[in-house]
Length: 158
Length: 158
DNA sequence: GCTCAATACGTGCAATTACACCTTTATCCG
DNA sequence: CGGATAAAGGTGTAATTGCACGTATTGAGC
Image (tube, rainbow over all chains, first blue to last red; front, side):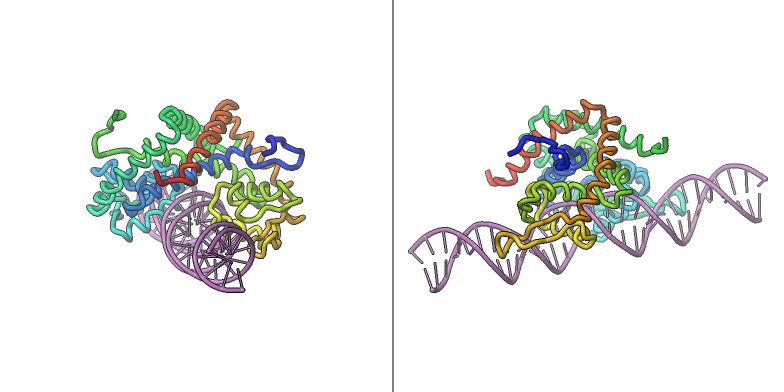
């Protein structure tokens, strides 16, 4: 393998922060999805349900949920569809005539409980591969970087 | 040893390594894509072209490219399509009658050169947001974790 | 009350991602 | 040589992602 020589005019994407991050993200997602496959839901769907579960007394609106998931609101709309079709979640009228609330159904709760041990297994597998401190450093890094990125997106105009 | 249990039965996805990683990955991708938008290509496409450029004497096969990009081979097929349609890349017959080689066209080279300063600007913006050592730690973490994940995928049976 | 901006949400479009399954071609071996 | 196996690639299907744009509802100011 050649050293990471820029070789003027031939930059490798290996130095691209975005490329690195996306590569790892894809592989980690694969690991989770493969581990959780028996539960019939993806890790994205698991996270979505988990977030919707958090305040059952006052179900979150779609925009609230999108914010908490760090996702585009319209992406949430699409990601919701298979879960609504499967009957795991339900849209209820919100406080407004505009807003809608996302509620977890009994089937959704059951699916979540079924998936939870598999999710935990995936977490442990990653922990085993990366080491406890590797995971801890990764978490700490994301926790410190994500707010920075999102703050800059809120005020991109200089 | 259990970590701090947040209300047994109400786990937040905040502790999910995969969720964290995907969240950051989405936001960073957004930053890159918005910065690079004037060039007319995404950061994924930029990385694809950059990788295809690396050995112009012997253009890589599709499988080679997929490996280098840490992507599924069939994903590469789909990601290639818009670039082929736009005439930035070209498929040439490979060494085999089976394999195909990916070649960068003159238009592809021009698009790459146009995108490069914008890509660099995005890199710098991330550097500014996360700090030089934040970026360095992130790179180091990915470099050390990605091989671990991929090795475990090659031999998932224990 | 009425106009207008802000809020909440959806759709069209297109790219990104990967699994299951298929065809075609090359190689290995008996 | 000929059949089994491996290698290279594509398609069907479906989920994930977000931008541009549109609709409906609310609230603020006049």
